[in-house]
Amino acid sequence: MRRIVTERRTRRRSPAHPDPSGSGGVTATPAAARRGTNGGEATISVVIPTLNEAANLPHVLARLPSWVDEVVLVDGHSVDDTIEVARAIRGDVRVILQDGRGKGNALACGFAAARGEIIVMLDADASNDPAEITRFVAVLLAGNDFAKGSRFAPGGRSTDITGLRRVGNRSLNGLVNALFGTRYSDLCYGYNAFWRHCLPHMNVTCDGFEVETLINVRVARAGLAVVEVPSIEHRRLFGESKLRTLRDGLRVLRTILSERMRRHDPVVNPDAWRPTFRELQPLWDPES
Image 1 (cartoon, one colour):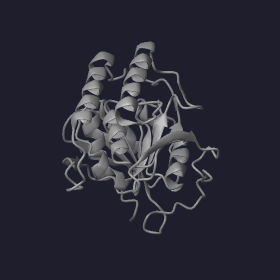
Image 2 (cartoon, one colour):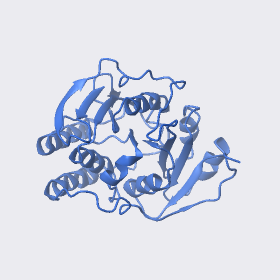
Image 3 (cartoon, rainbow, N blue to C red):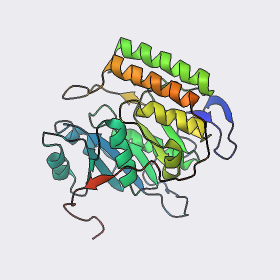
């Protein structure tokens, strides 16, 4: 693990350094006490944006740790059986219909709907290993604000990224490090976890694949305690990626430059970012 930013209360950045424990200082086992900010056990929500992922969802949902409290599936107007498949596998899944389009809007809707004290971002194409959630949560329980997945930190790798995307990610990542004083090793990766108090600082207001960059820049500017978690990205199992390298790369670049020009003001309205969304009636209530 690599610590990127000092704790939120200091508002100062520090050089990244490895965590010798490899788990953020907490034994990463489901039996470990999940101590929340209210003194009780921290609840965990997993937010999964989907768009025609019916074939991939069985490989994702079946591998979620049993101790995850809530799964929030945010559907982006799928025309296949995505929702039906999710409900058949997990009857307690909460299905949110996003109010707009794009991954950024889907994640914002999922964040707004999530009830957990810890929120995990997970892709629906089976490229992220749900078993790694344990390590992300351990980093947060160790006292950090944001656990940032990285394919290029020691122990991480990708079997999916193309040469062009690798070069683009490295270049844009270097630009963010230079402009914002971070020491990130990966910029455009969607596997992350965080405490819900990060949401007003993240202020997710974008629509597309630039959302990971927006989040990474804003948590850094807010001075949150960020630790990189090595992660292995696999090839998507079925279907085609919605990512378009050049188009989305330009969106990421525009986001970086606009964030650099934006004045960093204290959070006044912590709910200003929240989008509208519609939730389908659940098949059954896990609390009943």
